[in-house]
Length: 64
Image 1 (cartoon, rainbow, N blue to C red):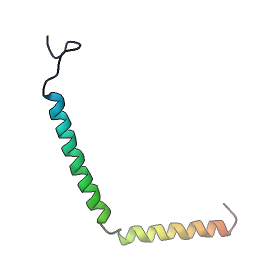
Image 2: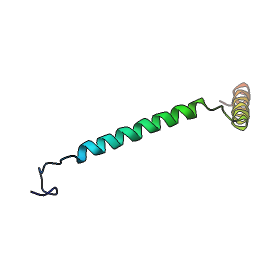
Image 3: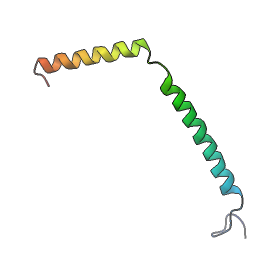
Image 4: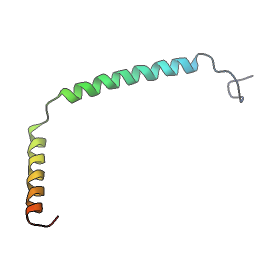
């Protein structure tokens, strides 16, 4: 029986794929944690503040 036949046993491949997936997941988790710790750029904070001000101004004008 070959690997392409229905019901053929898969030996070793599933385990190595699972190990590779776990390794990638672990590395991604570490990367995202490091990104979370980075400070927010001042330009982005300024933009968010402007958006908040515009939203507050819109609400006070009764447009929302």
